[in-house]
Image 1: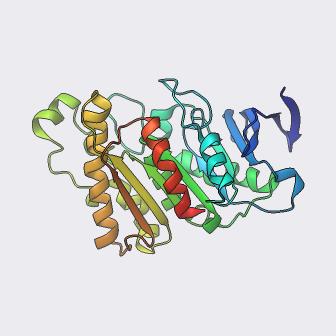
Image 2: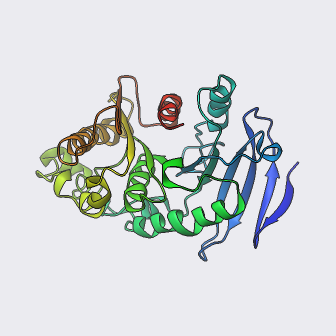
Length: 296
């Protein structure tokens, strides 16, 4: 049964589905900027019986990290993943802040993506780094320094995670980007039919607005970065185009980080190519356990 509570001027609900790893504080209408949104805060099971402060994972697409949601009603089952890792002491117990999008295409993109709304990523990143993180740090026992905070996501959410951390490295020193849409604004400059015929016209990630807007933090190597992508190409457009482009641009980003920005493989840059990986929640969840072990 859910129990209502107040933190500051925000109303939340305590609910406990019975995961060994923790329980939830859910804000159905967290209103920090005039745009109420749903945010799930997953707290370690021992949160109320210790004075310990915890690292924090901020997750994009928070409507499907713990529960079925999003356009396809899928979930990462993150509570079960964390429970397995906690049971064998594989990672440090952490707070997870799962942020549901209001307009996913708009909030998670910085450049044109065909006929979808786009361009809200800069404002979204500022929201996560400032009012949202500020609220969490004020009302929960967190380790608020950037080195103890991770921002994560997949697809457009992975692009948004990378952008947010690179724009606000003092807030988020770590990023986990699963199948990130680094192709937005490049391979989406043409409609899919034209792309199939002509490709992206030689547009490079190195000269993109994404790199222009994030190169300051990248050049200072202020982030610890995890990137991945899958190699399955059948099973529909999500694999044939979206994951293929995530792979091509992910490899391009990896090479940029190593060669132009001086990142070091397996030190502050980790990349994974999953031979069985697809562009879906099941694949991302399957890689999440190993990714978390790199940071926690």
